Image 1 (tube, rainbow, N blue to C red):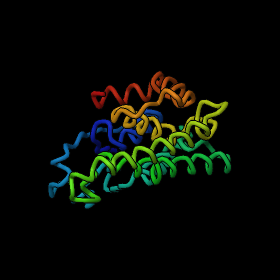
Image 2: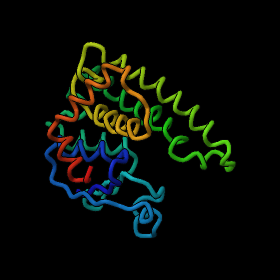
Image 3: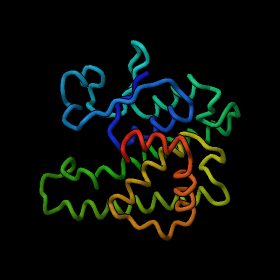
Image 4: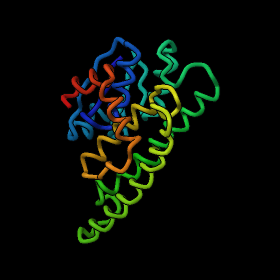
Length: 202
């Protein structure tokens, strides 16, 4: 298997999952410029990471890749094992990270995708930051009394950890989110997380 990634991007969640699964894999960094070149576009026409190849099989989209890894490495219990409700809860939080939290960062990172007028960009980014903070509050509340979103460690936690790194990177103050800070500490001490981050030079 081969994972195409950009350091610190959402593909870091897949990198962590591969480490948790003790998978035999190769990780290939892709530059922002290379994402739009024909060679990579042949793998992923969206020109984005993550992209996972497994032999001749090519898979894109984070949730799909993380689900695939869970199915391929059932012993790793990447989505919480066999209990139906635990798996459903893990999928719920994975979807939250992917569809809600991740998307809320797009206007912060790339306001030009929404409006050309640069004078409006700061206001757009400020509004997006408000939404991110509100969503982080949801995640913080979900961690009341537990270490992980679904009660056990799953790939949803890997995704949330990646997003929290983004939040800190853009200067969002997390000091009022006690549960998130404890979660960051827990995840930072995880060997799989450490291995993936070291491999990406983070």
